[in-house]
Amino acid sequence: MIGGQTRRIPNQNADNDNREQPMHYWRRIAILMVLSGMMILLGCGDDEDEGAGGIGDNADKDAVENQSEGEEDEEEDEEAENDEDPDEQLQEPPDDPEILCEMACDRVYATTSDGGCQQVFHHDTGAAMGAAACEEKCLEEDLFRGGEWCVITEAECGSHPSEMIDYCLPSGYHPPHCDHLPAWDPAVEALEEEVVVLVNELRDEGVTCPGTGTEMGPVGPVSMDEHLRCAARLHSMDMAERNFFAHDNPDGEDPFERIAAAGYTGEPAGENIAQGSTTAQGVVDQWLSSDTGHCENMLNAGHNDMGIGLYQDYWTQKFGR
Image (tube, rainbow, N blue to C red; front, side, top):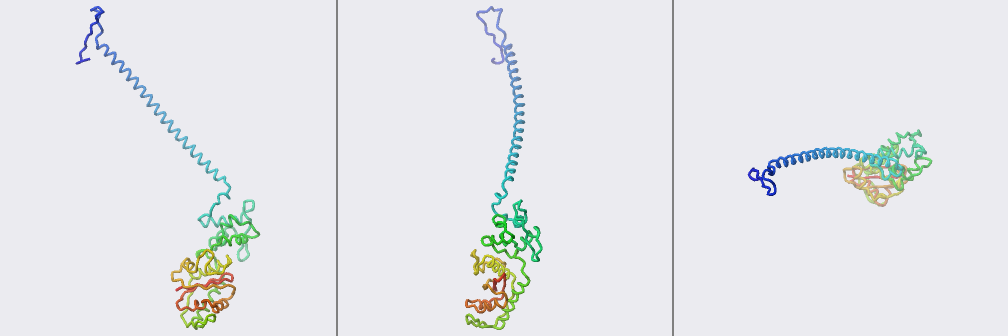
């Protein structure tokens, strides 16, 4: 079509009265065909939309199903983990001391059929200690002397829980911090305080050190400092438990590091140690007769703080200023 007009094309082989149909007739046919095609296309489009919606719905369903399957897999994994041998799960000690103490006491008190030792600790009075009291003393008084994890995983059940602790101390013992220092026997505390009195008497009088001949004139008194006392007690306990006698412990910690760790805010100044004496006068005499500076430490004018720690027959004397 040009310019909107219809042209007739003559047929040379046909009769003039029998002419070809006008062009607009075919245009109508073409338009109808196009419209029919569009309806078909629109119908396909609707079908596709419905199909897409269906696929989308199915996809959502599949996603939910897959999610459920994933959750089931996770639950199965958790169940598998829970089915593992409890001993195989014990890889390293827990960070929480309450859990550690609970596990250690449970190992001691649980029945043998439950993997425990079926034993009990006893109070100083001889009365049996319950499991709850065991956990309390573990936290507050270092009942296992730092060997909880060894008791849980290594020590074999003996006739008494102390045997398990003794087994663990040589390799597993570490002195507790001051916050967990066990309660001290009042009689032992009295001996520690008596040493302070005896030392101050010597400082007030002035003496010539028997072992070295050094004259130490009268000087002012020293006072008991609780931080130095704690550090002294910890070192005496450490020497007794790990069976050594030295200023540096087996871990390489020296006297000044122990004093700082105990929270002393002054200047660490020195340390005396002794072993064997059971009286305050006896240990002071040991230090007085020493030829390696123990007497001079006690009477040094620059020392004004002192801490004494007695554990069994191990003595430690700390100085600060």
